[in-house]
Amino acid sequence: MPWFYMQDMLTQGIECLRKYEYLVTKMKFPISIIPTFISVSKIAVHIVMLGILIITYWISGYPVDIYIIQLPIYIILNYTFFTAITFLLSILTAISKDILNFIKSTVSAVLWLSGILWDIDNIKNPILAAILRLNPVNFLIDGYRKCFIKKEWFFEDIGTLVLFMSVLIIIVIITVKCYKRNIKNLSDML
Image 1 (cartoon, rainbow, N blue to C red):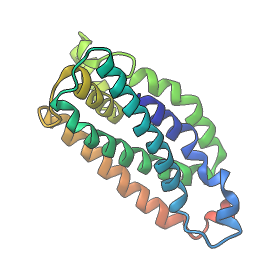
Image 2 (cartoon, one colour; image 1 turned 45 degrees about the vertical axis):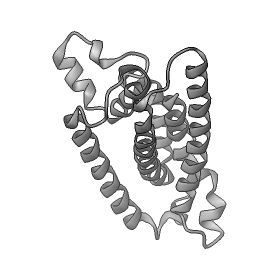
Image 3 (cartoon, one colour; image 1 turned 60 degrees about the horizontal axis):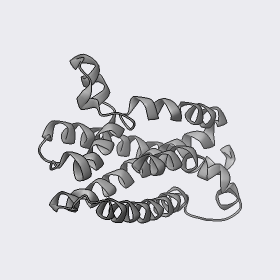
């Protein structure tokens, strides 16, 4: 379920400035609202889909237990991470359309390397597992698994939480710097 949100953000979200070019070039419209609006609309769909998933999960005979209360934490982290990524990549794709093509062509690689289709805990090679854990998408996917399947709390593995938060902070800092650096010339670049 989280992959649908991630994929939409990586494919549709990053081209939002190009898609809504007229808002950037023709009007005095706050550019920061465009990626945020896309992210809010995609997360609303994600939340509805999760609601359907929870109902289906319950109807199928699996009890909805206390671990489900941490799901909003993972939703907020998912939203924050992919809003920051979308914001950064949408600015970069406004500068060069080649970045957009590159990102769209690598989305399937993200799918296979992030543990969406398989659990990284089942990998026997510890070096490979450690390398794959560096992918922040894996933290989010594993978080959803912890809510429904693994029945673990998000703070039980504090190391990956700290690693994810560090990556998130770095991405937000890079996004803010990139935004401040390119905001004045963005309409000319489009």
